[in-house]
Length: 233
Image (tube, rainbow, N blue to C red; front, side, top):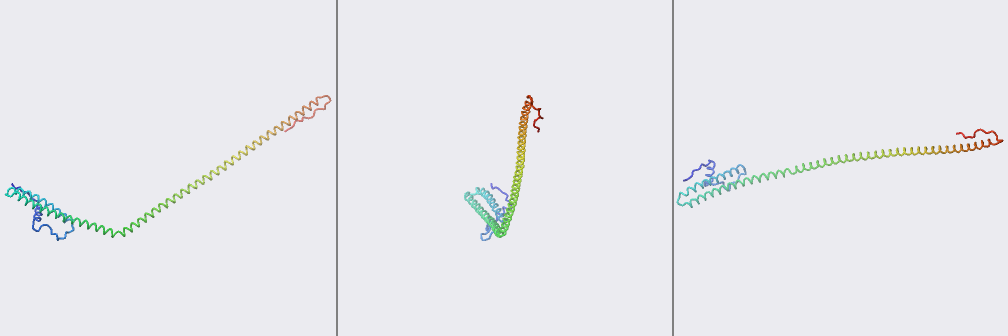
C-alpha cells in the first residue's frame, strides 16, 4: 500500500524549484555576499534533502507494485541522488557566500587596522612616554625619600656620636675630679699622719727632756725645776 505524507508548503515549494528544469542558481550568476541569502540557501538545501528522502521512501514502496521493481527503485534512487547533489550545490554556494563575507570582514578589519596604525603608533608612543615619565617621577621621589632618610640617619648618628663624646668628656672630667679629690684627700691624710708623727716625736723628746730634768732636779744640790718644756700645737 502506498503511504501518504504531508509536506510543509515551504518544503514542497523548494522541492518543486529543485526538480524544475531551471534547477538551482546558474553558475554565471555572481553570488551576493549576504549572510541572509546564505542562510536561505542552507535552509533550501535541507528542505531538498528531506523532501528527496521522503519522496524516495514513497517511490520505493510504490515500485514493489510494478513489474520491474529493481529498475523502478534504481530510478527513484537516482532522482534522490540528483536532488541531494542539487542540495549540496546550494550548500556549497552558501559556504562560498559565508567565506566571502568572512574575507570581506577580515579585509575591512585589516584595512581599519592599517588606517589606524599611525594613530595607534602615536598613542602608543605617547603612552610609553607617559609611563616613562611616571616611572622616572616615582624613581625620583623614591630617591629623594631615600636621600632624606639617609640624611636623617646620618644626622641622628652624628648627634649620637656628639652626645656620646660629650658624655665621655663629662664622665672623664668627673673621673679626673674624683681622682684629684682622692689624691688631695690622700695628701691631706699623709700630711696629717706626718704632722702627728712630728708631734708625737716632739712630745716624746719633751717628755724625755722633762724626765731627765726632773731627775736632775731630784738630785742633791739641783736647781729648782724649770717650766714644763712640753711642746704645744
